Length: 407
Image (cartoon, rainbow, N blue to C red; front, side, top):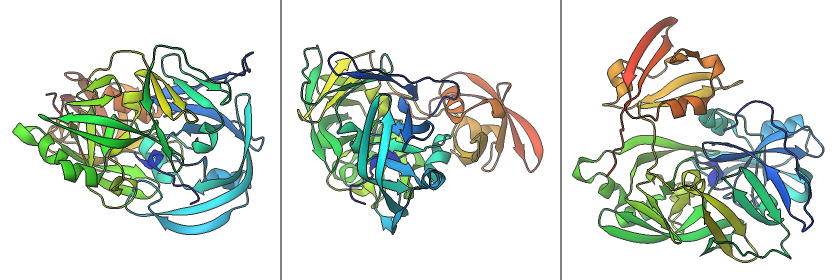
């Protein structure tokens, strides 16, 4: 690929319904574009070569704008095939990569053309997120202007590069752009130790922070996460290159600039392939951190500006012990892909392959995957599921609890 398509392809979500995305340039040249936000992930309506609006995600960690392979076919875009490529993103496998030329994107009232655009299949990501990715807006979009991501008011503000000045109360964090991806230095605190590292800013990564295998091993992060009987959960990260082995736990704190994120959920990679096997970065910082701020990506000024939004609290992860797969075409068939040992789901008899029929009386056909995920993050909550197995329905009840405990 001309530029690496990186960490979007980790293991984000579209809230269905009418959404009118409008924008008009301000007198100072600014463009404001409202966005949908689900689980901290930013969804935008994007037109490609004059098409009807498509569902794109803002991906700060993608080295270019990218179009889904199926959508490129529907749009009849001519493809230049590059074949299967390794290390095209997260995952231990390869990615079928192509390019298409001379693509015009329209995002609100911003219109721009890219001479070359990457085309990859998003099938695995669609299933993981439970929504259809038509594409991502990466460096091609973010390089057009200085971009403010206002998580508080759910809008983008696009400032002209040549006239942008900042006089707010935010904090500047030095930023460097490497192969189209923004990188900052952050400090992590784990146990009684600290470590600094270079992290990619990855807006669509739904959790707080993930550590590459080399950085985790160098600093003994996974071993520390297991100290004193604390639990880490086995799992997988999903990207365009398939799946990679991963463990989920906590660290004491993440320090980004002048801000401290307490007890974030952290992912510890064990792969040697793809973006999470890279030795040149410490990891990625995701939406669970970014959503607490108004974030400005000032590429010309080599800085990330953070304005405080709400007060960060310790993040949470699944408390039932279930990993779900959302099956196409509507991504409303939720199949159990993994059941954690010593979890409410395991104790209730849930098995791999079970399919969700209803959750707390709500039919699965009325749910999206993100709603299921959020419903299972409430410590102490009692939930009731109807599952189907081999054509037979069964009702299970469980009381949710933290599987990754607080310090």
